[in-house]
Length: 69
Image 1 (cartoon, one colour):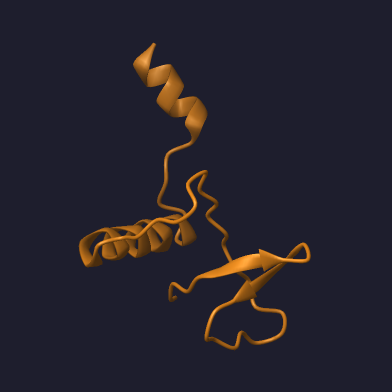
Image 2 (cartoon, rainbow, N blue to C red):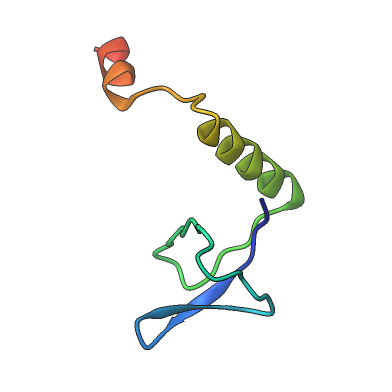
């Protein structure tokens, strides 16, 4: 897994400086801000969290809501 960035052009996502293989699965994070930047530690944490989710290591939102009620 890797992180890259791009922008929407003509309704399609155009990735900066990287060729993605046809049919690649991608995850898109959209921010309300014009831009954002992650520190190396934040990027590492994001990748670790995504890997956890990919393995199914996550908590269902309903379980979280039940726990805090």
